[in-house]
Image (cartoon, rainbow, N blue to C red; front, side):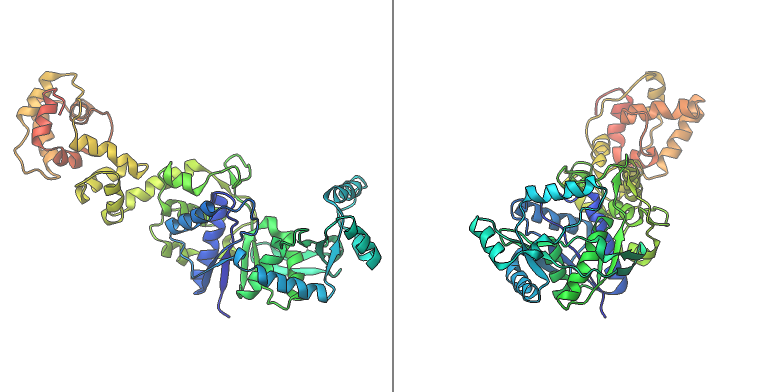
Length: 447
């Protein structure tokens, strides 16, 4: 059987790193097995689903390189959900209930106060035809629950291992709302069955849902997929992430923090696994290293500082060809491989390259503390053309004339040439600065 997985976000907010981690794990699992990856928008929550969020999901996944082989949208499939619901009603597995939300809350509160689990009492199954007619005459509309079999539900989870639920500990779930709209518990199963999903990889907050949904798969005659439930990602302080709150959104990491896609992918692919977190330059490398068995059950924490460090390491490895477009987008017209090689060891994010472009191509106010020393150095500045050996030859000559060495030699030259105390190696920067600009800066002129 060909492996088929799905990432099924609701377009009700911005994707955060926890959402994208699940997408990435599904994508890596599919690619490792030579299978397919489905993007399915679970958009039946019409009040909260927004087109801009749907577009954002596609934009975020595309930015990360998580291309999908198939696409589906739940809002296109209402007819199919109605068809399945009618079949379940006919078989007696879907039954009408008339309690109001307030009545259900009272029932739950009463059970909890008695120390009992808040399991629905199936009172609706005891209603007669005349009872239902009376309730409907009062203006009540039915919501529909799935009648669970009170038998054990078991599966071997690819992350959690053997999982067991007693059927009597599960509450009959509502599958159809009073307004006739289907809920996630039903639509997800119908989609997974119809679209031949073989493996459902999702967060551990769905474990109880899985126990219920396995019975729905069986009731509608669909293949029961294998399941893997990953521990949910938290922030560095251990707090949960939320689309509604905009927690650590992928959009903000890309647009405001300047994070490279492979930095985020390298981190998320290894968080919570036994593998060390190392920079990777391609998704193919992550596919080769992926094994879902390495994912532990402990709660992984996402630390933005760790991501920032990894982002810098990624930039330090990227060849010019991979960043040429980004440099051009920053307005660095004419930036070439020599410039990139010179500055990349000092970048935390690619936008930082603008600072060093200004140092090499725009006026800089030099820091001059010893004009006499700088004048001696300027007199020894060799003629162009310059290359990477020019700095060593020049500073060697300055050292011979002035007797200076170490910090006393190099720091005044750096401050005059760049206006800064730290930065890329000057053997790389000097040819980019050029002789004319260097002479003016050594003379204390802004150039």
